[in-house]
Image (cartoon, rainbow over all chains, first blue to last red; front, side, top):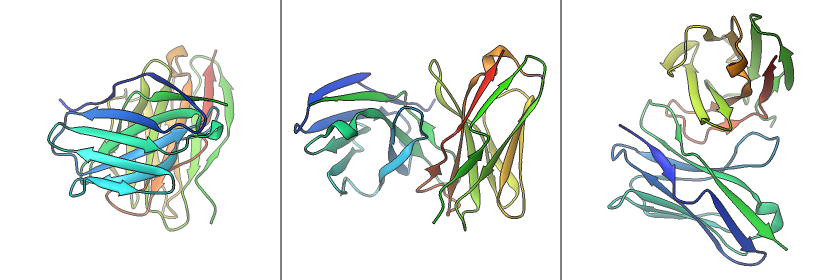
Length: 111
Length: 113
């Protein structure tokens, strides 16, 4: 079956550190991957996406890496700030299908 | 550009009642998806609509239903509420048929007592 899962439920970092959040997926047919950030009391916020024909994509302070060989996705946040504290979800999608979400990783940033 | 708007933000209902939640997608977005979020189960897909047609449906009982109107606004209905239906219900909209760049609303927090 298909599944998207996260390796670490909680990640604690110091302000200014770089953070890496990991995600494993099992469906090799997935075409598209997305990272979302969810703060308490809010809906998930789109951060960055990547298509399966890419292995890296960069945004503002964030980089997503896709390793299709081992079915692994990661989100790197540079110079992590307290405002980055949230739950981060990875999600995968296939054409005309629906988003399947992982369980989420809590990122805690200490000042 | 306004984001995805969900109403109401909070609801308290009693067991056995029914409830209707509303979602207004981002202007121009034709795809609307609904998700249920609970601490134990995470984000679970309910249904997805594109141009008024239900294209995908998750593994939820028939008490959960939805529809999409010609202006892309969507509603979901839950009948005969159970305590376990207490959750955050999230709506996401996308401009593409492929659900790329899906944007979420703030959600409706439903509490069943």
